Length: 168
Image 1: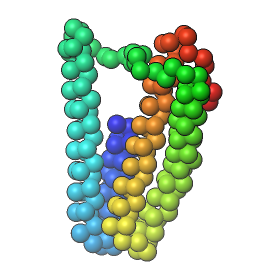
Image 2: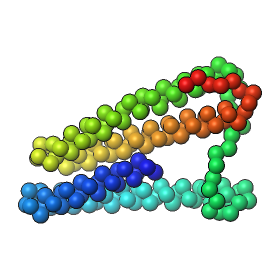
Image 3: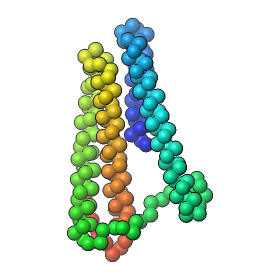
Image 4: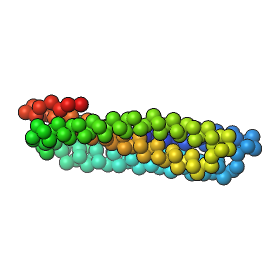
């Protein structure tokens, strides 16, 4: 959800900047309208993610007999890899995936900032800026999902003391 929040915040800032440019008659009304739509879409995406998170939390709490709005804590899964080489292999794959995505994010954000600067000076169309923002959002989502998967894997390993520690 934090990626959705960051996306919404970026779009809100761009909308304000485009509105100021429109007021100064240096940006077309269509740009402002497109940014408003993209901002509304990002806000809806954030609201849907929050609603889905709450729905699943309530469903799990209902199944385990807790109050519906109780916070959830991760529990160890029973399907942890049993063989030490499987554990090492899965751990290395997860670590490599998280590391590669972590290296990608600064590049994506830097490129997005450059595209935005080019948009401000008329060198890039708004559609290119919005497309690039969507790519950054998707990269942020992939990173957060990979990180959460790696954390869940570590949690499973910690919950099973007979499993050897995984390498990072």
